[in-house]
Image (cartoon, rainbow, N blue to C red; front, top):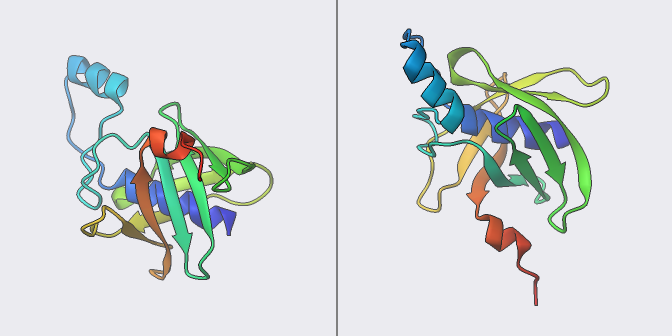
Length: 143
């Protein structure tokens, strides 16, 4: 399940890559900003925290870091996993979890009105629904 959360988030965030060659100056600017054109998510910068809802109703949070790492937590902030991420072929998002689990790649669907999008596994099945959340919303205590 943790792999699905990670992969789902990454795929949705990765969106589409570009095969065009850029000038070195443009590459440096892009690397600094970690901005990507994401046709499947329309989210721009993929770094951030995402709420991941699975088909069974469970929820986890995934933080995508601009340095190529990610951390999975429970909604209350307990760390449950992590690893590295990369943009894969055809705009997929690939996650390589810590430990012996293999890397998995995911693709994202078009975002809905609330910004959530479906994450699909390599076989095309929907794995989860992913939505970027604000950092302040995560830090605010529930009352």
